Image 1: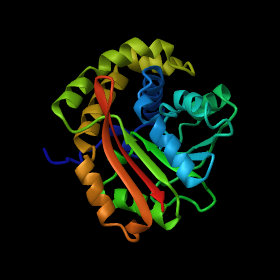
Image 2 (image 1 turned 90 degrees about the vertical axis):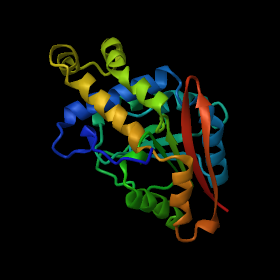
Image 3 (image 1 turned 90 degrees about the horizontal axis):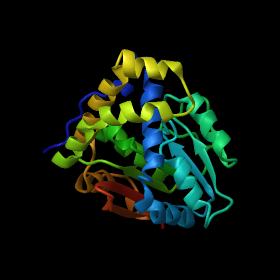
Amino acid sequence: MGRLHLFEFEDQKWFPGFLRDYGTDFLQFLSNKTKLYKPVVPIIAKGLKKSGTNQIVDLGSGGGGGLLWLNSELRKTNPDLKIVLTDYYPNLKAFVYTQKQADNFEFIATSIDARKVPESLKGFRTQFLSLHHFKPKDARQILQNAVDAKSAIGIFEAQERSVLSILAMLFSPISVVFTTPFIKPFKIGRLIFTYLIPIVPLFVLWDGVVSSLRTYSVTEMNALVNKLENKDTYNWEIERVKSGPGVVLYLLGTPK
């Protein structure tokens, strides 16, 4: 099946910000509780080591992704690690909550475009569950911007364009219903728009299925890299690894 760039609700400017935040809060909670990115901890550690930095600049952070759990793992071998959360639509309440859980988190309160990262933001760039939001031209721009800045970059997608991945997404409304009472920070609106007016489970379902249909395959990520200027000044690692019953697709680019 070819990649289909359908729309996701959370990408739309008209979509209410508080609903978008409820969706990213859910993804953050699920990623941490399931240790979704456990198989790629060594990849992230490698990116940090090869980039010669102890700072991660996370792009498209949403509600913080699985970074709380990842942070605890990475600090075992990198105790001076710092993580900066950024997003085009910053989920500030989630950022503040994440910052309170560990003393090495910072965040940028203003909008940060992954295609044009400010030169002042130095570190190993990461993206979790976000590359699929960008069309090929914009995805290449993200990678090109990293190369131009001589910044290492790691991209991680915990779904793929497959029947099994789409079937898994069909169960996401059930996950939303059962996890909502445990998601922090507590918000009464989250309960209202999950149980009384079930917008959150429905838009998470739609966006989840569309995310699978929009995910770049290993072959497609290689094609993105092949069109970059000065791509040969970087080492590129693009693979697919198992994560429990699912998979994580990743791209790691580090300067030679």
